[in-house]
Image 1 (spheres, rainbow, N blue to C red):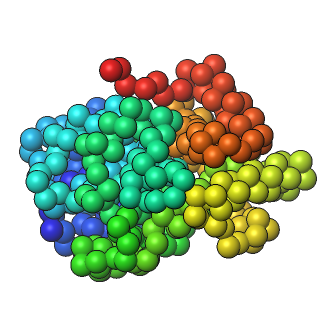
Image 2 (cartoon, rainbow, N blue to C red):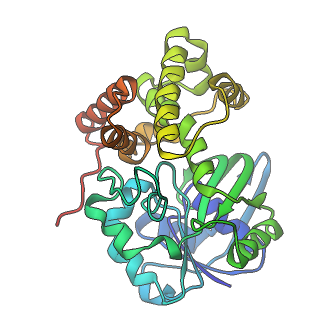
Length: 330
């Protein structure tokens, strides 16, 4: 299996290393300082005192990596619309796409059924361009339960790797999902196939859609937020509103908020990806994590006041700091 990686960051780099460890042919498309670092020093993955270095081909020429069997998208969700021409340049007729992002993915409501079937979420996929170019049939859905960060270009620090969940948007996982699960497991990534990948994406978002933006607004780690009664109460309220949206579109949440909070507490002083982006001066994923939920609430006629309020606050924060990702022109 030949793999192209676009976005070898905290999650994409970890997954690329796992596939390389399994013996797959992995190439990375990169630019600027990342390209220089990958060429000069390789891709480094650090866990505790252990460090592995993977010398993988890296280039800024899409033609050199076009037509791989698998395209691993490690870019942030809100970067995908602008990257679409580059993504299309990497695809061959049989290339399967593995998007490893937070939030609602562009393909989520394709073939889903129910009151949100086929709805285009402008916060996620402006104008529906991603859905037209990258249909769900080409996708393997992915949920990465991992805590990792980029220490420097080409240098990934793995804090905790829990599970990598893979599934077919069309239903029960088939041979292509099974083959990818096996490859990841061979490479030391704890992967498993799941029968309903949308439910797993929704469940992860149930936690991310509150902890991520609140961490940016408070500039606080997970433990600090959950130790504060007011912030904790807001987390629970946002979870309730998202659960109501899920129930309306056929994605009920089986857990109670306190169960999810207990899981988050076990991460200790974990700093969310949005807080890391804020501190590094990178654009914030406000659309895929919260904007899409607000659009769904609009579509369903739900008030969702806490989701709307926090979305407005974090979007304005991003705008005032110059960290808001504008929609691509045209």
